[in-house]
Amino acid sequence: MHVNQSISKQDGSVAISYLAMLIPMIIAAALTIVIGYHVQLSNRGMQATDAASFACEFRGEYDQTVAQGYLDYYRPKVDKVSGQIGANSGCNVSLGYSLSTIFTSLTLSDASFVVSSMANEKAYVTEDVASEPLELIMVLDISGSMAGDLEDLKDILKRGLASLKEQQNNALSKDHIKVSIVPFSDGVSVNNAPWLNETGTYCVEGITESGGNFSAAHTVANLDVTHDQTAVKTSQPDKWLMDCSATSVTLPLTADLDQVTNAVDSLRSEGGTASYQGLIWGLRQLTPNWQKAWEIGPNRNFDKVERKLVLMTDGADNGSHFDELINAGLCDRAKGYGVTLNFVGFGVYGARLEQFTRCAGDANGVFSASNTQELDSYFSQLLSVQYDTRLNFGNN
Image (cartoon, rainbow, N blue to C red; front, side, top):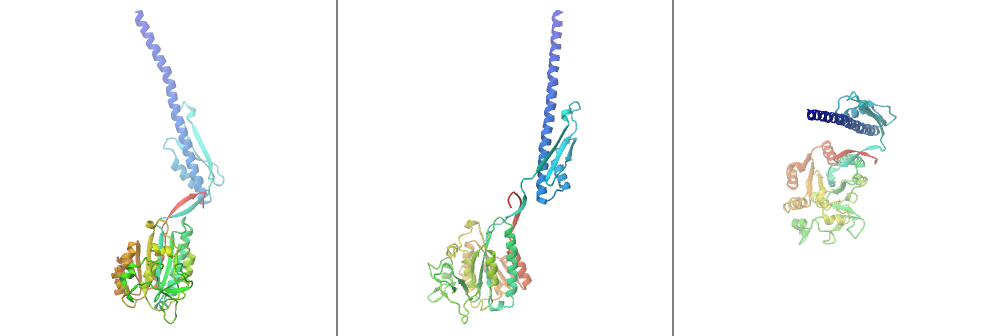
């Protein structure tokens, strides 16, 4: 009997001891939960306040609707939490959250956090180029037949270049596009070309002869062979021979769009049509050896630059040189250098467009325009760059 009473007393002591330990454990667990809520309220309050402050700097003014939107977005997914908008001064924004009592016996579970924040840096919109760097060659017909439309073409190109310049001014990469202008009539002219020993304006022959006669095969083989290896035949412009223009000269690849605009503005119509000359010298703005000769240098990584040549003409060539060069592989050679060939026929049809399609290798590379409005649409798309817009803090 005495033993049983002793055991009963021990059981009672254990139960009391367990209860004595359990109550503090419950309180500790409750406090842990409450503290966790406090931390979450504080963190979310800071996130909402920072976001609203940056938005204020970006907009240039405080907007309570925007602030409320961030407050709702960052509100913790907890019952009995409400948002609070405090007083603000300019973009010094005060936002926070309050949590009503979770455990009625613990006043500590009441919580209210209002955080004040002001953006330390201004926000700016900048644009990153979304496409690869581009080297664009515009081979333009300035023959006498273009006299009635050349001024319209110049206006179209200048509008496109002005738009392109505005786009580049907003981009981080100002030299993303390099442009060359290669005008042609009966031939192509250059002025103070760095690869020539002479200064001044010269007509330059693009074809190579064999035995005194034109050789399409040798011309294709010599596409990237520079003047110091095989001399280019040159002559000074002669208004009676009409062999090239003395004023509308080749502009080598440049990122200076003001130079490009000036080159377009100086175009004058004269002479006949030898688009194969324009094509050859246009391609020689894009091949590696000739780029060195022109002192252009490769644009960044040679394999990652988009190279595009656009030849625009309103008529057919005299003779069969263009067809012979296509058959000899000139267009295939160009594609081997990664050049995309595009042709714009202005008021030309039939065999000429078929000739262009054979060279481009794809009908999508040929555009037939019957009026200047269609030319405007084509060149406005050509002279544009795709950009990704991003928000930048601290640097304009």
